[in-house]
Amino acid sequence: MSEPKNTEKKASNKLLWKARWAKNDEFYTQLSYIEKELGYYKDHFKDKVVFCNCDDPEESHFWKYFEMNFEHLGIKKLVSTHFEDEKPSYKLEIIGDGNHNGKVNNLDIIKTPLKQNGDFRSPECIEILQEADIVVTNPPFSLFREYVAQLFEYEKKFIIIGNLNAITYKEIFKLIKENKVWPGCTFDGRNIWFRIPDSYETYHKIENGVKYAFVAGTIWFTNLDYDKRHEDFILYKTYNESEYTKYDHYDAINVDKTKDIPMDYAGTIGVPITFLLKYNPAQFEIIDWIGRYSILDGPTEETRGKQLAQVKWKPIYKRIIIRNKKTLTPNLSLLWK
Ligand SMILES: C[S@@+](CC[C@H](N)C(=O)[O-])C[C@H]1O[C@@H](n2cnc3c(N)ncnc32)[C@H](O)[C@@H]1O
Image 1 (cartoon, rainbow, N blue to C red):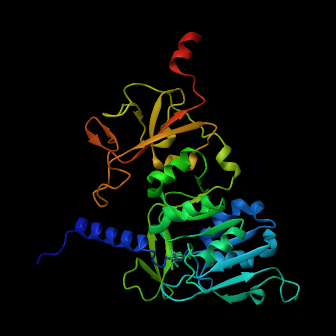
Image 2: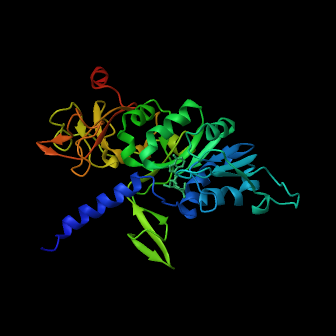
Image 3: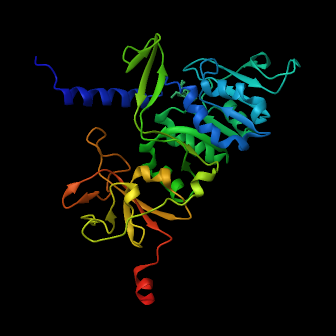
């Protein structure tokens, strides 16, 4: 049998990691990544009950972050539940300086068995959720829609890890459009590295005996406000018909890079989904999304029936359709002349 070509190898690797990531596998978030994002929300945690509900507290750096910063953030209570496939699990809690030794640390941890398996949907975990103010974790990606729906059902604040792909899920896009969910602060387009269990045979790198894998397009989702999302994104280009072509099947101009959005165009504009990292709801309105499915995914519930993002018969990647709220409509600007 002939050796697989490089491109075939790449595609099968991509599939393998996509499947692993989607299948609730153990991808542990690194402390540095958590610290970088959560640093933007410091004021939100004072007197709050924080719940990490998809974490093995003995492994989780989310737990570690809040345990270490309990006093600094002024947290009222920290709870984490651990998930087991088919047996009862446990929860860990810190409710301040329980042992009265003058500081909050791992000596204050209270471990209690659960009757159920720690599934975030189990009645026991829902009871804890109801008592919580802010949920922070990296939930299993295959259950992402269900996970977010539950957060909204119980009206919780949250900072969670997901993937850029989730932006075009019907339910998630609706929440983004309605300004009820937005991406977090830290995304620079680079792959995010997760620690993975030693037992995994495949990995992307090994450092000091620890295995790591990366997942492209990892981002944070939140409904906690932060200053940066209210800053206008500075635009410097102006519209001209030859540079900004319209899509073949959709009435909007195509923009390949968010920074190239023309400042004076009042109509509908298609931008890459990474635009959301620059999205200020006072500056732009989100209208729709268009796009073709990736060959690796095949058509999904979301992409079936969607308009192709195609310019001069050339298909391009998914686009979010926006309008610049701060530009005068073309008709009005004519009146001004
Ligand atoms: C992507 S890993 C993230 C682990 C941890 N939150 C972190 O970031 O280091 C997702 C975790 O969710 C757990 N999990 C899977 N299904 C779950 C469920 N139904 N309820 C709660 N946790 C679940 C998995 O065991 C896994 O540890």
